[in-house]
Image (cartoon, rainbow, N blue to C red; front, side, top):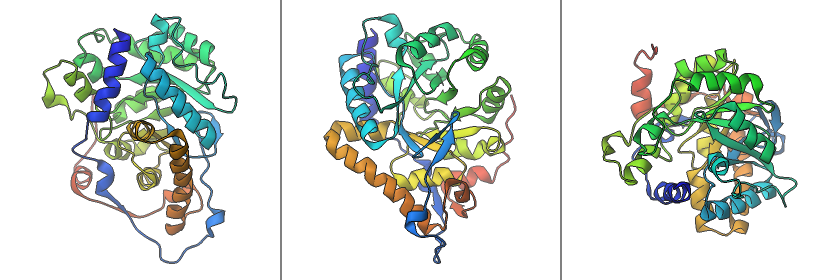
Length: 338
């Protein structure tokens, strides 16, 4: 069951085209008189308890099948060669099959920066299995409520999730990142996560992979929920009150370096790429993808230079314009209540 489901996720993730991407509703204000030379631009960042050389990473995607294993191996090759972080897909499949080696990508890659992922429906004791097996730099714990509700074989009991999150925050031997899966994390959830001890969250908004669409393609009949949730930049704008308390990461619809920089301007410490990386690795050779990713590092510096910013913190001072849905939302009172 899990092998078939994981392969279906890959199949439908590649088929889906989001009808809206919030990054297109944001424009950065160009600075005509630069302040820095290009070689002075610093793209390092800090989140999940450590420094990182680059502010983008390959985000959780797959595992638990032969196809997933092949994709993970190729993505890990790219990540190691480029010096960027690679996060495996949910380790849950390996918990059900001890012989599953689709996540064991570090064996012959000593320099790989590796993290892994598990669902919040799993108690900490199971998450510790993933930590012991893979020795990740951090553990992503994902919340995927709407996906579970739409999945025929999905979870139907959720009251334990908050207790599980508290356990992960208190007991984990590696840093924990609370991650949405494309529905956009709301401010109340971020605040509760903070109160429970979480210090890094991936807001993962709508605009990239849609697990509502994927589960509906797998046999559901609720297409009217395909666009459920908040877009990536809307979720990031909503999260501004927590920007100085927590490390905010974003994913969902990030396509290239300009999208990345827009997220940094709104306070993101780093961005994760899933669908974009999946498309690249399925379309091009590993060598070609390495070349593309390395060019992105330089492109981020180019854009930062054009904005007169030396580092990611300075980017937060860049003026910007919002259009369309983002502008309309900003004109409304967005105080959330639960």
